[in-house]
Length: 173
Image (cartoon, rainbow, N blue to C red; front, side, top):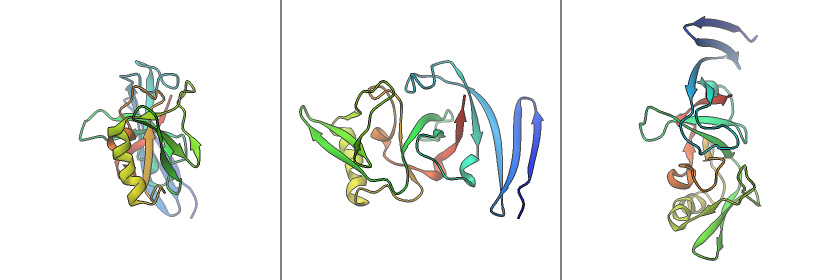
């Protein structure tokens, strides 16, 4: 099956359909202004991004993709980095002062500034359930989403692994 590409531009919204493996995948592009600093150093507060809605309907999420995530019914999506993808190993390593390190594929996870992601007891408890239930392997259609600032981000440390069905799309600057 050949690939078809159709582009429609109306009122600042672009839509295209890309045939991929015989599947039609509608993608709409929406302009958004970032509100928040959880991706500081990668995407700054008040900068403009483009969300490619539906992008992952026919494509796999790659490590370090920046994604828009539907969180708790909030109409404003969270924008996060896919740091852990299906098949990755992940673990928590106890540290002193009631904190834990996050480890993906046997490497300590660091943020955009080079600081280690540290989890408090609540965050470690949430992710430890996934480590226990899935044997330390991120299951199919699940992702570990993190902000770029390890100390100030609502991300998988608070809400656990994200399902593919809750990914709105890929984010571009």
